[in-house]
Length: 380
Image (cartoon, one colour):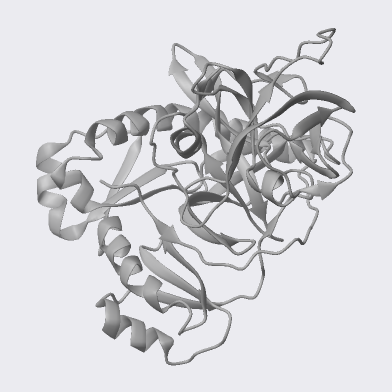
């Protein structure tokens, strides 16, 4: 099945908001859910990788989500249920159910409605895996819009919402402290280690950090006031699937210092791997943001939408992942990390992507898979 594309069209400006999750009880609950979910996702990820391109699975899959008890629900279109049960012997860790519409049907509807987002003042279109509905958010109230879309799309499960909250990129000015880097007078956050097509080592961050600072390839990057490398490549353009940049690390010109990447994370953590595969981001999955600019703890939250498209500072980006973690200025480029169960009681941290931007309720990140595809990178 082709990668799920949920259209989220929102105008993004440079606006910041600050909310962090610091309560020890909240973190403990998130960590408990994280390990419980990891074991179930281990089986779901294998199912997805093996079956996502099969005719039956791709045409019938209707979404997946965790409920409040961390039970994983997987839905399939009702018309295919007999064939699904004949074909698959599902794990008893899955709660398998049916829904009216498949993700594929919603994707096809989105392709149609995306031509009308300006005409109907639509700011966001998303698929709700939990309610099996198409959620259309508008900037202007329109009482007749639902009837119009039902007739246009031939889909009954449509919800109309009104929301003017905007999304913003999260660079900031003159940031020189912590695990942040500066480019000219702008500051962003280091994401994860990688290599370019020449095998040079460096780190990944957000592409808009380069463009919005008025920089280009070759621009110096500083950490703690020292030049550590320069911009090797970046992408932040219409219809791309990543907001990303690669910084080639190097030594001072007199070679007294050599800067190299690592897999260390702030707050005395480390990741083991990068999620370089095309996986399905399950709604409700616990995820964490690592960045220490004005944060006193790791920020925990959940994936709220598996794939969205946004207008980021006037640039249309596809296949971003939405979370309910609220980030702040200076966080752009920082890593989102998910715990993976590797079997035998072993849990590993996998980087899922890097932060692009957010608003007062959500944040959005580019996936490692899309970043590597767009910039021709490999893991360090």
